[in-house]
Image (cartoon, rainbow, N blue to C red):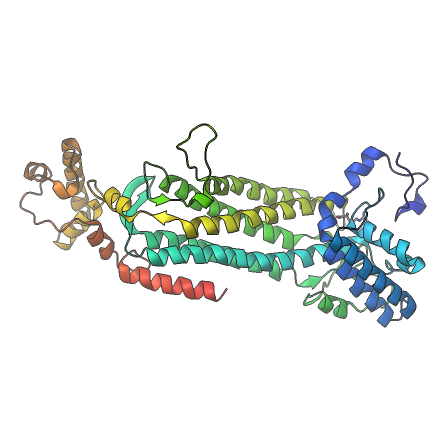
Amino acid sequence: MTAEPERLWGGRFSGGPADAFDRLNASLPVDRRLWREDVRGSRVHARMLCRQGILSSDDGEAIDSGLQQIEQELADGDFRFAPGDEDIHTAVERRLTEIVGDAGRRLHTARSRNDQVITDTLVWLRDHARAQRELLRGLAEALLAQAEAHVDSILPGYTHLQRAQPVRLAHHLAAYVWMLDRDRVRLDAAVAACEECPLGSGALAGVGFPVDRETVAHELGFARPAPNSMDAVGSRDALADYLHFAAQLGVHLSRLGAEFVWWSSEEAGFVVLDDAYASGSSMLPQKKNPDAAELARAKAPRLVADLAGLLGVLHGLPLAYNKDLQDDKHYLFDAADTLDLLLPALAGMVATAAFRPDRMAAACRGGFLAATDLADHLVRAGWPFRRAHEAVGRLVRACAARGVGLEDAPADALAEAGLDGVPLPPLTAEASVEAKASVGGTARAAVLAELDAARARVAAW
Ligand code: ARG
């Protein structure tokens, strides 16, 4: 048993909790980071109680100055947590009572930790999500800047990681900007899910005092009070929305990471990472490893697991508050912290990466990247596409057997494919990308239009 600290809920109990239970039950190690939101919420709550005549103005003043002192102690790192501080709410109220006595014991009038904790969490989530939006913008802008610098750099585009058709690097990089734009929509949806203030819902049924929930909601930055007290204390939809954003973004970042791992390999050699965004090997002196990109790949399953974890906690819970819900913040903070690490590192890695247009161009030559362009050429000359596809396929086979690229096809190979005497177009990567002038394609004009649209979209975030 612990020495007997005063418990918020002690009256009903004959003795203190067992140490083993206390360690399991306590959430302070996780939720202490909500101290700013908790003190802010308590000050707004106490002011409202005074205005409504529920607390005397003397008590209100004592509480407010006590909470300000606590805020200062927490900000300075001077706040001393006590063994009985189960969570941040308990710690603040315990300290307030130490400072101002009985006035502190009145703070929890018309409030439960059940409405308090989700209010604190939504305020934290809303503010954090807004800050994270800027990190997302940083990565989108790094991608856009590289795209704008590489409109005329052409590399093989892959399907099945087999060289398929040439594309502009700008087009390839911009694909990720569109993914991030959809992630931004999901992030905004999570912020929008934080609009209703739970405070004033009490433990589950509402409160028996004439509280002013409208003003409390507005002072804490919410649009309105939550309309159902049981839903307000028992739901975690906003967290699930945020974690869906984080999981989907994580998947996108893992794919970007995978590109950079491959592009920076000696085999591809399409990009050289800046020394500031790579690390070495303790044994192999020549190594320069794309760790940020690899970690981006590895974080995706963790972010997906955070979403799955929270939904797992929530599923099957009867209304209203259940202690299971205390575990929500573990997933929320893990995802938020992971993205806080990942987004700036990836933005820096992308911004400082040195692309190698020469290596990309070399990878486009001497192979079969123009095979579809040749088939398209035959189609324009009147061939049915399926016959053109067949003939070019035979030509690829004949060239592959001779170890030459399509552009160097000798006469006998052309004859084998039934293409002797057919005038061939220039089979360059430039001609290939320029032919893809359809909207959303990789021709220069289409890519420039796309980049303009992407720039405007990100500017409007
Ligand atoms: N630490 C708790 C949480 O994070 C606060 C609410 C506890 N409420 C209760 N009735 N035990 O969910």
